[in-house]
Figure 1 (cartoon, rainbow, N blue to C red):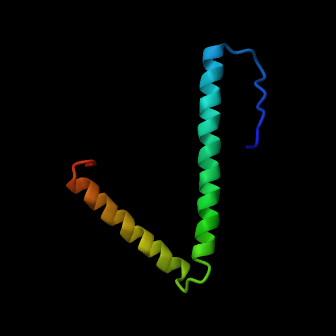
Figure 2: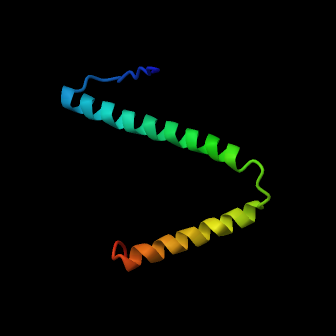
Length: 77
């Protein structure tokens, strides 16, 4: 596992320092997950014949269908 060192320019109490560590950990994990997903998607869709506009339209359709399902379940207004 790699290690990243972050220097905090001012003195902070231990409670704030622990919160900062957790926040930084979450941000780094999300960024790594995003990069790995993008890399995998690039590999999977490299041979796709869909245009960018077709992909965007399919994404919009998925978003609309998801929103409809959430509304039906009462999870959103």
